[in-house]
Image 1: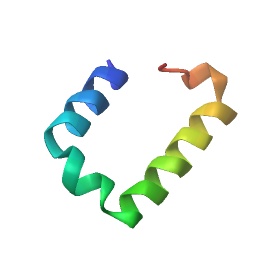
Image 2: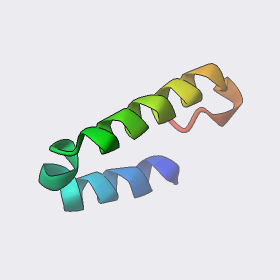
Image 3: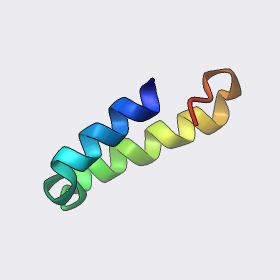
Image 4: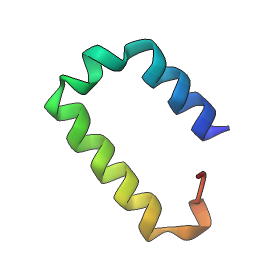
Length: 43
């Protein structure tokens, strides 16, 4: 569910978001959090 929601969000706003360094930083921290908490593995 989470992956699908994130993918839809990325598809809709991909160009704008990937130009945004703050978004890239937040996404990196989110992915690191997922890696550190395997019980929340949405991937």
